[in-house]
Length: 450
Ligand code: UD1
Ligand code: CA
Image (cartoon, rainbow, N blue to C red; front, side, top):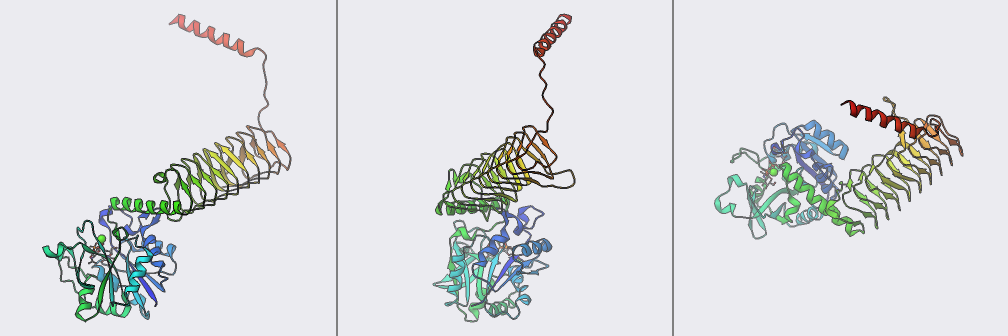
């Protein structure tokens, strides 16, 4: 059966207290909307429609980045969840199959749960996703009669007796598209909130004699985000899950609760991650790597057998080949480091390529920026860059070439050549002793005078 996702994302999210629309707030460094869309993608939808309203243009731009085939429709006034889904009708004209409604601010529903909803569609015309709430608070309550869901009552409209029900509405639902839009047209706004409730579909479907049921999932999956505190809690849930998955596939996390992962962090088997490591978006780490404490990685690729850190910073475009060593207080940006090369101490390597088995001495800097433009530094294989070398780009140091420590390299160095670029040293015999005597005498005169 064909599936269309309708993802509600028009709300302002006032309690976020933010200029950024709620659904664009990040969890593990991806907008929560992206997590919601990713959950739905597991159903292999033929169509995806995002309903935007508040800050719609920003939402539209974000959706285009996440999934260029997704459509965005506008709900110019937020008149309720039922009204919101109705805005997707034109976009889905001609579509035959099931509509699955997701919420942009409910990012953790699992693929298995969504699959169980679709499965339940063989028994019912309308399927609602519910959960046993530890604290039902203001959620809509599911009024069940055996397997049948009779109706959903919003907290505001519920009687004391109905408020005692702990089986709650997640908001997610599935039904045949034609049925859903037909029922939606019947929804009114005669209720405590004066809104067009999507939840009214249950009672309307029952009135037509249609079968309505609820599927239950763990409360964790329906976690809705309304405040910054909820956002932090959601991030924590994500982190816990992601760390557990890594441990499961054979990654060692020495202190799992101190490792911060991004939504797309990939780490291979037998890699060891020491405490307090942060992964930004776009990191892939192969097997058998050691990431030492307090390192920060984003947009980079680390190959098998590499050692990184402690206190290393890998920025976007850092590409480490096998068995490379990147040591403490080293920053690598937009640079390829060749197999077995070492950059062990206090260096900045940016917009560069470093050849195989090259050794970069402590304190080496690629001076890649002239204040206006960025320039590249190329270093060949098996080269030796002396400590505290400044490589003023654009510049090339050849294979098996050397630079003397303290060199400021402004001209290319040929293969096998040695570049010395510093003021020659002069030693003055006995001069230190004389200088000291003179200084001590000066101090003694000053002390007498005061
Ligand atoms: C809704 C449900 C409630 C359920 C709860 C679960 C209704 C009437 N109530 O209540 O039964 O327990 O979710 O979290 O559906 N939205 C729009 N346009 C609108 C209104 C809302 O796009 O006009 C979007 C919001 O951005 C949000 C989602 O729909 O992503 C839910 O809306 P919200 O106002 O948070 O609904 P609740 O009152 O929490
Ligand atoms: Ca809500």
